[in-house]
Length: 353
Ligand SMILES: [Zn+2]
Image (tube, rainbow, N blue to C red; front, top):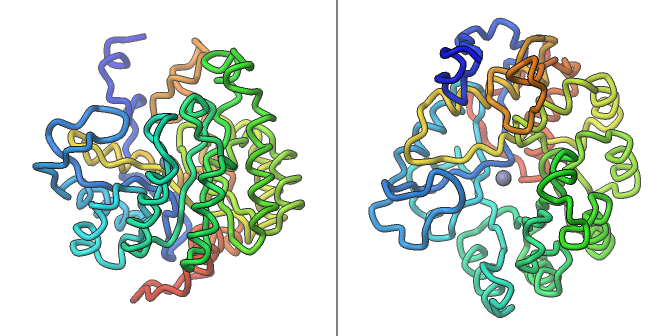
């Protein structure tokens, strides 16, 4: 690698000009169904969840991210954040932000009551979605999607009027050969879906969203089977590096899948606000997401990707899917609008040209 490459920021390895957007063809509003807009503070770790003590936290990074979002046509971002951040963010950003309450346990020994209390705090704040993070690395903490305490929080959330549940199951195929190679501890990739299927069968009255293309952009046939079996399942497009890396090489199959089920996909970025992030970090993810879905742009992905291990090229190829405009309108806006309830988006009627 040249010096220029090694010193390039992760959000722009190739030195691309993100102001070049002439390949964008969609002019309507977009809803980002999967974000982590939180307050941030100077002592926050560079990765991972923020510390419990939120003293000194501000919503300045959230303002930067939502400003960039607006520049890319995003009229609403639904955020997973701590319950105490919700009133502050709602006060500052109004209709530009919505909320998703993530129900987790910090340790395997946490009592079920802790999860119930967390749910109650989110319900008091009027969250639209409940999230169950259930990656293989959460198994040690008992974070199975169908853990008894999550079945209980689902029942209570539905009784309280929540109609949408988001689930993170699985992780990239590549990880099952490396970090998850111990299948006795983490389970196989296929085993990750057992709990999801159970929840989908137990709660058909709710809408379910499989985050990150259901955790399996590597296998459009599997996603097809899930969508056909469970009419209340949706998939979001979030986790930009993962989607760029895995969708580009199978863009025709993914395009066909999304065109067969245009009502079942939702735009998502998975962007996280962090204290020291430059504006261009947020720009890079929105730029790649829109480029992937609405254009036939082709070139090396501008974003550094630690899961891309092919030495001949520093980043994976990005090859746009170019969804038809009527499908884009649904994936970018209509499907989320329908799930969340009709939104009032002034001056942003989609243009179906
Ligand atoms: Zn996320």
